[in-house]
Length: 132
Image (cartoon, rainbow, N blue to C red; front, side):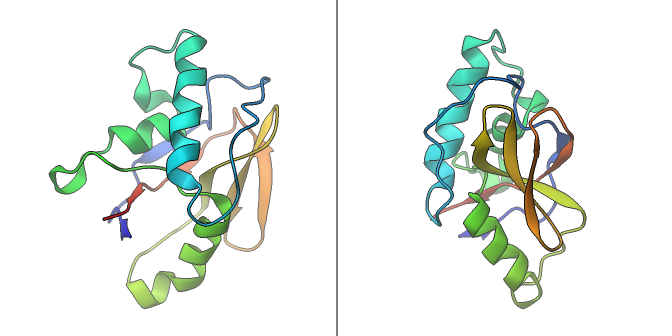
């Protein structure tokens, strides 16, 4: 896995704050599929092309290293990333969105310790990752 060297920004989880997607998982390996499930919900709500307005869109918009397969981590993988951040040499400061939905109006985020969920409209950081 490759982690973007810097945060992509601070945004809400989704422009749709009261409808559940129902298909996002929390496990390691769920992030890519979760990200792909979040984007159509935003598009169906009228967000066509406004990828920088919400976390999953911002992660997929990132083109670091000329690559276009970036996504938002699931909560379990985000927790692992926080646990290993010193070993892999990255800085993570503040709260970060995961791609894992907690309920119709909240999603999982990681803010130092512990993880928790927050309203989808709250602003948190985005850090894109990709598999190779």
